[in-house]
Image (cartoon, rainbow, N blue to C red; front, side, top):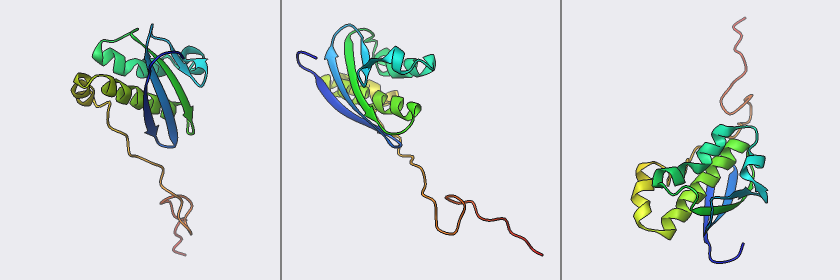
Length: 131
């Protein structure tokens, strides 16, 4: 990618996305692949990826290049979405309040709870037998 870019980091569950935002024609590449190819299983995830742009009415104004690792596809898309929103907030301070009202700048803090010793899972216990 030639020219200036804005960098931001997005996280969700165990996914981490490093996002580069440049002015362009609206191309989104994830790990070197076009987003349509990377997220071929779900059109819903593609629309979630575009949400920061649709809220600000900036469709097809920026190119996105994302490096994402860890987690599943939905967590990765949420991490990229947060990275895009953070990068847009850095490019123009006026976008920050709109993105905040749309609840796009907050990181979702929910993580998987660890399995505890003596239990079957994080909280599930063995079945109690009275007799």
